[in-house]
Length: 460
Image 1 (cartoon, rainbow, N blue to C red):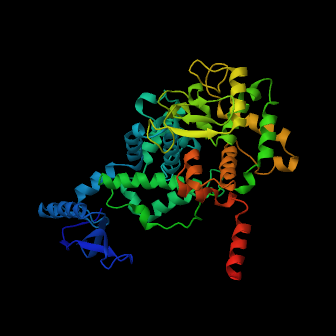
Image 2: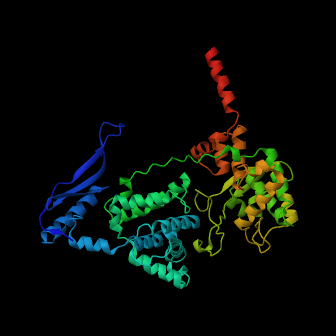
Image 3: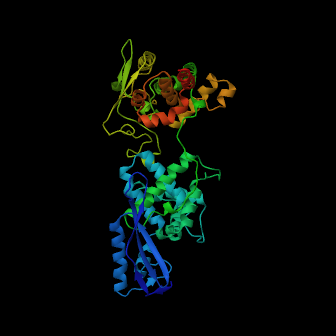
């Protein structure tokens, strides 16, 4: 470490931006400037308070006669303190801090992303395990709360010891090359092929949030992610219209489901029908109970949704089961969502309750043990049903490739039928803006209407 006692400080510089919305420039950050030896140094902060606090620490160190590191520009005491905190130890602390506030799916996404990042932010220390072993050790041990950790195998314990010793200091992320290496890794799948844009954006968001947390704790002066630009095609989230079935195809699929297995398909058919005729998410259909259903003998019925039961690995749920019941997506814990259902679905549900009964907790769709159907079983039944209902060319196409595509077909049908966007959004549990963005390309027949209106205007 090369040090110097020749230090000079400058006033804090305020950085502004004129966004064109007003004449007065907007303050976006504050930069602390100083020199160590003959080298200029700077560090930028979001708020003036953080900048003033940092400058005060530098001045106090200089006043106490402390040497400054010429490479980092920091007092020796600050360099040592920062180097003590590794990326690995900070990532573990981050997971433990946010775990109680996150849903099971969010916990899974968080740990999966950090398990991909952590091997990148390490040195080439000898004895490095295979990356897959490192990721397994992080996902299944290190990034779990202490009371959920299993007894580690010798292989896992060895991988944890290695990553503890080889992890880069958190401060290394101030170098753009490390941050870029992480982004490039997130843009690829495990097989080296480009990852889907939506996957990259989701994992980048986790990385961004971790770094923002480091800034909040003042362990990083600014988010280093802002320095690196990695071009990636933006994802609008639009639905592939090729996956959307028409009513006839949907009914053929539902009929085909009943032919799968000795009784398994018959037990699931009404669940799939809820996704198509009611636009329910799979987790919402899985959590449906008899008390949530108003099923008159004639006319429209009503489902009052209050719970969802998405599937994830049991290590991420509070109950220890693969399905953990939660409130509805994007709504308060006790909020409900009324979904009117057509007479056809009312008839299907009444027949299902008559034939299959309900579970002890009132659940409509469950295994013989009363638990929700595993996702792997649902997917297997669906794949087989597609082979019965579709031609070979359709089977290899995206048409209704997943059970979730039934929900997409439902919402597309509502919009094509002329249901106003706010009403369709309320039934689907979406915001109107999201609804129109996601389903814009699935609204058929609008081009001809628009063309005719333009001709009428030209003629006038």
